[in-house]
Amino acid sequence: MLGTLQNTVPGREFWRRLLPVAVLLAAAILGYDASPVWLFVPIGLAVILVLLRQPLLGLMGLIVAALAVKFAINTGTEVSLNAAATLVPILFVIWLLNRMHDHDIRLVKSRANLPLILFLLSGLLSIFIGNVTWAPSVPKSGNFIIVQFAQWAMWAFSAIAFWLAGNTVKTITWLRRLTICFITVAGLLAMVRVTPNGFDTLYNTVSFAVDRAPFWLLLTALSVGQLLFNRRITTWQRLALYVIIGAIILYSFGEEQERMANWVSVVCAVGVLIWLRFPRVRLVVVVAILVLIGSGVLFRFIYDFAGGDAKWDESGGSRLALIGSVVELSMHNPITGLGPAAYRAYGKTTSLQYGRVFYSSAWLSSHNNYVDIFSQTGILGLGLFLWFMLQVFLLGLRLRKRYPDGFAGGYVNSMIAVWAGIMVIMAIGDWFLPFVYNIGFPGFQASVLVWMFLGGLIALDHIQPAAPTGSSNA
Image (tube, rainbow, N blue to C red; front, side, top):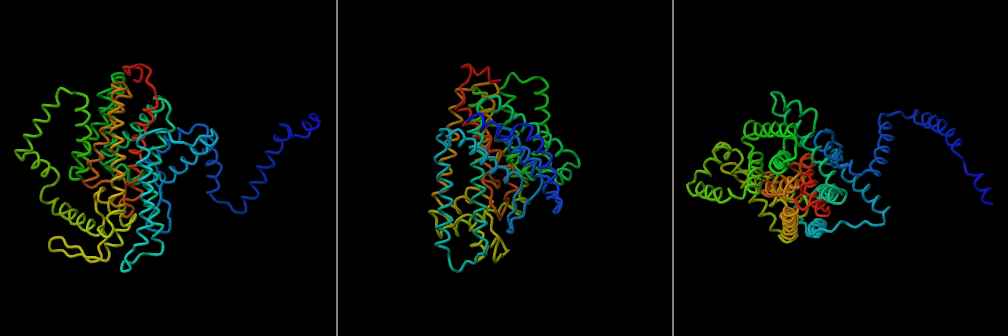
């Protein structure tokens, strides 16, 4: 009986003969509706099969997609998707399929998981409550709910990038590869950006991420972190990092001097890394900063360097007026917020005055990420987000004791510096959780990589160092 069954099963020769027939049949069918789109179908299937076998290549692909791929997908609303926004959910599905295959879809343990999950749930709750309690006098478009879910999706995709890194990276070798990939791609873009025609070159060829503060913050922290903490990088690697840092300085303190978030994030990252690397200079630094603050020299220098009265009249004072208006509107529901993206609709029903200028039906954007989160998710959502950020910071501090030097030591200290920089620039006009009506998914291409590399801290928390000194992690 078994022999009979085996004789009825098609052998390799049968499938070898069937393959050209299938190819010719597919060509004949597709010939009636020829389109370049069909070329991407087999390529996409091949990529998915590769990622199922090696999902960490997907994180490398996310770095390239976020920084170097320029295209937009129209959604029929004011929101358009890009390569990074489409790749993140694909990588999540691939991770989920792999975990289902292993009969274990749990996240690796981390104290950061619970507040992040609750934050996402609070966003969904804000959508529901915001629509139930919507003021009848505030008009909204028929597809506004799509925009709201697009805003929530940006938060969810950020969290997924964080979890993907934390749950798929299993070795320091792969974390090093991801870091090298980012520094290489981002470093090349940074060097091109500071060339005479660099802006025009990159504007027409790569993503919007290169002109955002999170991009420069992450590149600065990872580069300086390796220089200060990893003694095993080669001379050529060290030279390359110096060149990249030179490009960062030229961009942040030269060409984009008046864009405060850029150079403030760079100063913050370098300052934190120096503080962590050289404990003996901490007292001197604290005393110097207190003296400069007390004398007023520090404030005057920062104010003048950022553009002085001209820059304040152009955007500084108006941003305070915007923040005040958004907070005032948000008092309609301060506990769970107006709902994702909702304060833009509420702002159209009120007037805004700044100086002698009077705006009616203002298109509001707070330009402050904390105010943004509060307005959309209320005190509840903002509190959960701050709880999550606190857990990430504490995780970084714990890992410093386990990884004092080498590559891993540089990485951990870099992420603490990135954390500090993000907390600062969120308050002065850049985005860790982009606002869909302001920077939107183009800004997500810069911020998503910060989420991904912060997720690397979870991975390191579950990797046992080979030696107590961390020297083997160079």
